[in-house]
Length: 415
Ligand SMILES: [Zn+2]
Image (cartoon, rainbow, N blue to C red; front, side, top):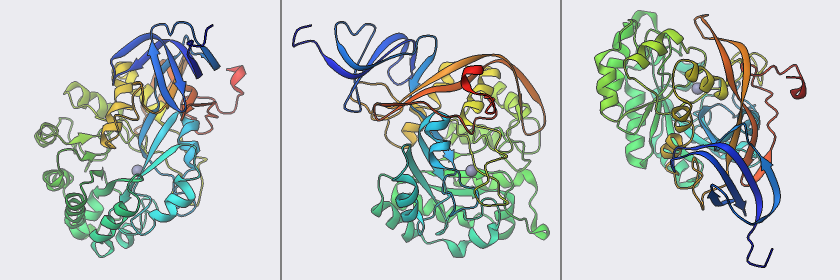
């Protein structure tokens, strides 16, 4: 080796490297130096490396981005540990959806985002406080009196790298009390700040039963307000007031909304339905992003003992329903990076971008995956994170919260 031989911090060799951003799909070597992708080539040629990683037999993708998590632990009742939801679940970047509001996002930065190894971002809640009680106490926390558009503007000015959007809701509870007033204010905040919205769908807050809307009327009222580039969540949810509505056929307004450039997210969560997913996928209604909506239980603080879904579980289910692996990776890398406006730096393996990488193990074996309606899909292969590289540093994920795709009671070596 002469002095012109390049030296890299880390070199990863794989035979199945999938990067929708650059179009690479196949064997390659990835070189990392100083936390950046230094080179990607079929064969790097002569080089030296501080650390070499052999990922052959596994799937190598840009670091996964989970666009929907809840990680304001202890301040909200349903927040998870950010690294449990992030790197230890295979995601190098996670986006908290509305746990923090503009008056509480400073604490989110100091106590959650800054100490985490995972890259943590926030779509701030449209209300000032955030989702302090998960899906509960909606009338207290999410009413129009709790909105301050100028507070959202201030939050963006104070924390521009952290605050990347605004979380709001379009569901029966809020509609029964205030119709579309809160979403209208959130859109106004989006217009003033240039931030995209992420809009929850499906009954969540307590409904004023004297004003309960017909389920099909809810999204008819909210959809027209939602702008191109905004995201509507829980696209394959079985909630009757959700995107599909109460019927079995995709409503015309859903196609119109897609055609206008509004995005849909999986937002896997508590209400994902294979029945709805099959009908929507057959009609060509596909998610732009695959978010997990992982969170703890609403009935106590910091209780993740019942969480039984995950980002990798959502990816595995979509593959089992017929979505090709490349499309699943597109929706967990490049597409969410574009929502964050950072596709040049994350969600890609392009030379010069940040060295965030996820290596997935395609674990073989029959495995049952239930949905919210109790239907069970038996799969032969599931995606389980084997390694993440965050800012150039390899980390073995502990998979503690991956109960749906991994037997967390059995040591890794025994599986
Ligand atoms: Zn959520």
